[in-house]
Structures are given as structure tokens and as C-alpha cells.
Image (cartoon, rainbow, N blue to C red; front, side):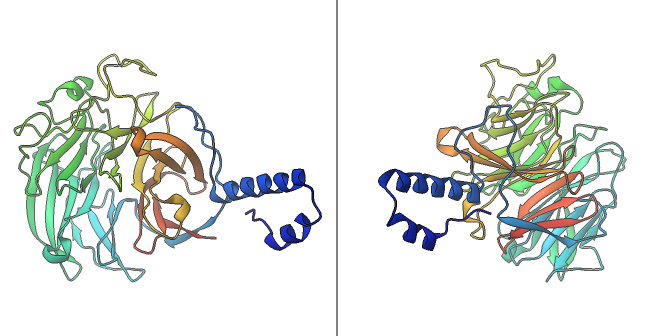
Length: 378
């Protein structure tokens, strides 16, 4: 980490001419930029992300875990996470993993199926509602959103909120979350049929929007009888809401090209369709904020709103499966989400990564196949 020695500057500048003082000021400004891990030039749409100058360290929070695919912090500070293939939702309280799971459901684990989505009701403090999305082993073979009530770290009163969601071997999406509007959002892949993504009547290939009880809001962009919030996604897994505006930012998995970060607007069409061309430039569709070719299989995304890392305020963080990177993106929400800076915090050290969330302590937590790690101050 580079810092400017203010005492040395005050002694030296008394003997320096104006040119030297300007040089020192410029050097100091550059050092501060490096300390913050910033880049002054916006990267191109497909450009690489430079390494971030360390202002942090990585520590292992929990180890010997079983594919903690999705994490969420409850308002009271407990960390909940899903085990991908066991059907168990686990609870971490005061830094300790509880022996008994919160709940255990049956899951279909072939292909990309499993226990995927996890979120808390906006009124969790009063109603204790926890929501999950899992793929059932059948019959019927489907994806369902279930709601449980938290009772002393155990899930009771199972209620089906949404069912009959497609369950295919691949391209399932599968994450859930509540928006600032109080609505439940669900990512669903195209079900291995690109035509689904362009059909507003299909539940596949888009983000879906429901009331908390599973009914369809009358304010949905394609009408109150359609759950679709947008069109044209292939296999978007995770998403988060911009802290200032509530706009959705989502990761997207392409074919052999064009993994993406997308800014999702109501009724927007993101272009996945039959015969999709790599590097698509068709102006009929909403262009991604960033493309990744070769593909990286992006998974978890999360905005940072804490105070521990003020230089990260409102930045978007993303992890991926292929390269095992934690990347940071500075987005300009006033300019349609343009990415103006990007950096790499972790570059493959921990293998495939699944999710990233901000903890109540202001640290960033990310999960690998057998552990949960966290980013803490240096």
C-alpha cells in the first residue's frame, strides 16, 4: 500500500521550486488513487480488469463445508446458507455453525439442479419468514419456492409460494430475492430452449416478479397475468438492487461467449434468442454493461453499502465459477449503469466461487466449494 509521508513533504517543499512541488502533488494524488484501487480510465466493454492494490486481506470464516452455494444474512446478524446437493439450509450464529440444519428438503441434484435460492422476507423481524428455491426429485420434477417460519433456528410451517417452475438439466437460473418494492424476484434460465426467452408467456429465460404470497402483481410490465419482468436472458443466476435507485443488476451465463453483467429494467429485452450471434450489436435489444469472452460462468453479485471500505461504497461485486475471481465494478447509475472502473480482488486462489454478500460487520463474504471466506481490512 502506498501512502504519502506528510512530514517529509512539509520539510522538503520549503526548499523546492514550484515545479518540484507540482510534481510531488501529482505523485501524491497518484498514490492515493493506487491506495483506493482505482483506475481513471473506463475499461472497454470486453476489457480486462486490472489487479486491485491491496487495502484488505482474505481470511477463512468457515471451512469443511458442503457446497455453500447461496448465502444470506438475517437482519439479526445470523448467516444462513444453502448446501447445493444435500437440501439443507444451515445457520451460523455468533461465528459458529449450528449442528442442526434450519431445514432439510428433498432435492433433485442432476445437472445444475439443487437447493439454490435463499432470501428473507422484508418483514422478517416481525414474521420470521425465510424463502428458498429448490428442485424437487419428483414427481413432479419442478422448481418450487417454499416459505418457512424461523422458530429458534428451525424452519416450521412449510408453505408453497410458487411451484410449477421448469426444472431442466441445465439453464435453471434459480436465485430469489426481495426488491425495495417488497416484491419477490426469481431468476429462471431458458430451460435449454432459447425461444422461451422471447416469449412473455413463458416463465423461462427471464427474471420473474411475484407478490410475497406468490400471486402476480398487476403492475408487472407485461400485464398482471404474466410473471415476466423482462425478456431475453439465457441463464442468469444472481442479482442485486442498486442501493440508490433499486435497479436490478444481474449476472448472466452465455453460450461459448458473452457472459454478461446486465442492468435489468422493467420490460427490457436482453437479446438471448435462437441463432444468437456472439458480440450481438442489434440495437433492438438492451446491451450488456460488460461482456466476458472467454466465458467465466458468473455466479454471485452484490452491491456494497458498508462503511468498513468507504472506497467501495455502492460498487458492484461479482464472483465466478470458472476463474474463481472476485471482481469489483464501479457503476454510474446516473448514466444507465456504465461501468467506469473495475478491479480484481481475488484471482483464482480459492477455486470455483458461488456467492458473495455483505455482512452486518461491513466485511464481504464469498463462498467456494468447501468454505466461506471474507474480505477484511488490511
